[in-house]
Length: 307
Image 1 (tube, helix red, strand yellow):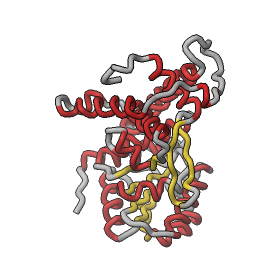
Image 2: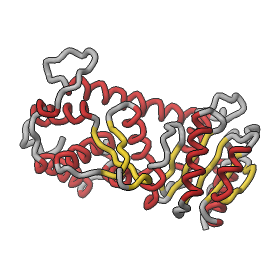
Image 3: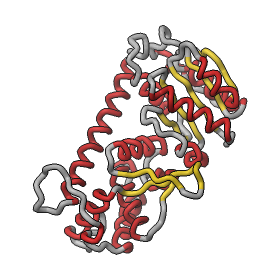
């Protein structure tokens, strides 16, 4: 049984509209409801997932919809996610999708609205952050006005700014070292310097080796780790699913997915639908990102163990 600390109950949700909770099982419904109540929010309704799409479509007022998924529900899940995508895009309410790691590929393929927040195997703090961030997307003055929400919203803004900086740097590199820092030009793949798979694998191995001697959080750099993993896959002509890329990021899965979403938004990564399975997407490097990485490896000393 999951228990959530009452330390979250000081969040200022008491005047907000209720949260509609839905889940793929009774256990999931109970887990989500207990957490939402522990934050001080009010659970307006507990709805089985197979009934949730019609319920949220007719919902008059809700501050958020919390979706707790611990099993694949097939078509009802697809229908619900499609409804939530539309509603969040229209600004009807905020939404959080909490999912087990083994289901992330299945669910992420159906979500294309950037403002939907994700939690993957999340602990109480990750869940609280997701709820606060989701509600911070809303413009309603009665929504979360507490310090926690503002702090987490600021964290997301900082992440977006950091990814924007990375995207701009990669765009400049894709034109070569002597190019001006103006609007990036697309370079044909044939112009990209050759990079061996073993070179990239060596860098990845060296980066992972550090965790034997130092705490991993000292070197957390999810953007670079994901870039390396996707470059390695591109060279080897392999496709990378979302779950695999989150593992490569070497940070908690929820954090990794937040980075991934932002990198896609900024054009650093591309989502590519699986032509054989509409319920799965792959992630790959954008052409200019690939150009930048290949030029970078061509310029650095190939003997460098850790980059």
